[in-house]
Image 1 (cartoon, one colour):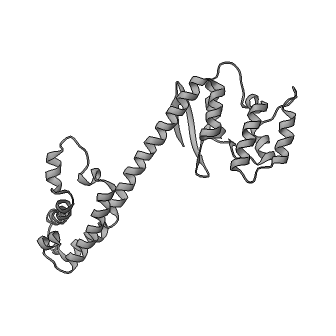
Image 2 (cartoon, rainbow, N blue to C red; image 1 turned 45 degrees about the horizontal axis):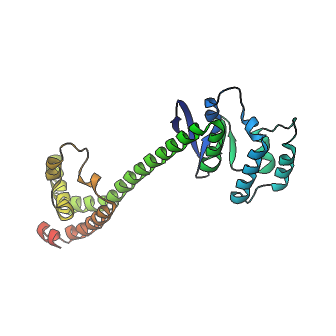
Length: 245
């Protein structure tokens, strides 16, 4: 569950079957006057649009039931709830959710954005902008997480090799830390051309360490180097030879 703010309206966004759905119940708060989701759903143009979308993306759509609903949409007495519509047609484009974050949710761009236009043209423009901003933020966070995972792939193999082959049993934790740091810096120098301390001195305003700012390709190379260096340590190869190798 995430949230975006469109103009002054907070709107929930959820994932349903790995697809983003936007809460149109929240969006309705931005529309002037007393309106309900059923007012939008009973509109013939809305139903035509939803029917085309379901036909394209939902192989389980009950088009026979939908045709009956669509044909009734011209009658003044016609009214249908989201729950009834979904149950009869097996629609997936809009979903009614109960519970704490309950409400009617519509599939992101195609349907939720169309509903935004029903609120107002201005609202739709801001909705699109805020949703895109959310996706860009999520992508940036995913990229950061992926980079961190890459840096961890062979980290344990490397540190285990150091512990088993280079750290005597009688050393203090502080001495052991210096040995770990020394071996890590062998790779930092090979990959980035400077030690962790030299990088921090050169970038006092940046948080984290040199590996946090590496590219994905650099982290892949670094991960492979950690694996190789673990082998070199196990074979008793001196540090300077590991670096040159």
